[in-house]
Length: 229
Image (cartoon, rainbow, N blue to C red; front, top):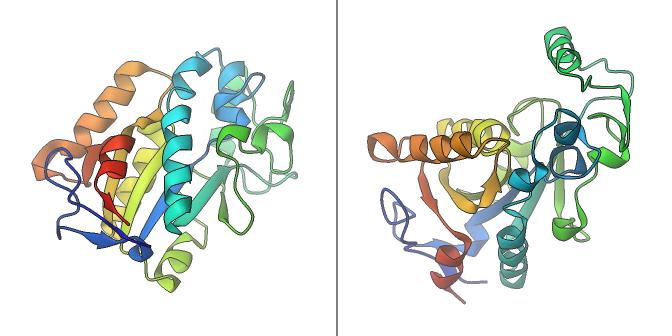
């Protein structure tokens, strides 16, 4: 137990209210799955460099250990669809097939983006510990068609620290959803990654516009240094 802040973030010292108890803060680890950052997964099958999506793993692992030492709420998310694909929109399936990585098709890591398959699992570097919350989602945002909002509000969470992949898609969508729900958000530049470095940088820059339209940007070490136990 402790407190965090102020974190030297961009565009303002985070959080806006100066400091926040770790009991009111959650660490979100978004979609650190083999399908997005492991060999033979969805991103790999699309032909993208998984080195870019894996870039945030070391800092995330370090921050995750720090959060656990403080007793912070840790939430892991996984994107994936039911084995019968009943929750897979037709256009999403069509787009994935068009680029050679059809969701539901067999691949080196099992059926692509299907719940229960090896590719759907979270990679060992940041695997959930016993008792940590896991939220399974069918789309990009972690609040859509999930119980995440209920979990956070039941625990009295008001502030979120976001890590994960990809910066410009699932992490950014979740941050936008959280901002609209009144959560004070901090995204970490070294704990995120995208399939394109330009997209990663642009997504982080967008957060800083309009005085912090969705929250703030910082690093794992910024958070760790600003923690008082």
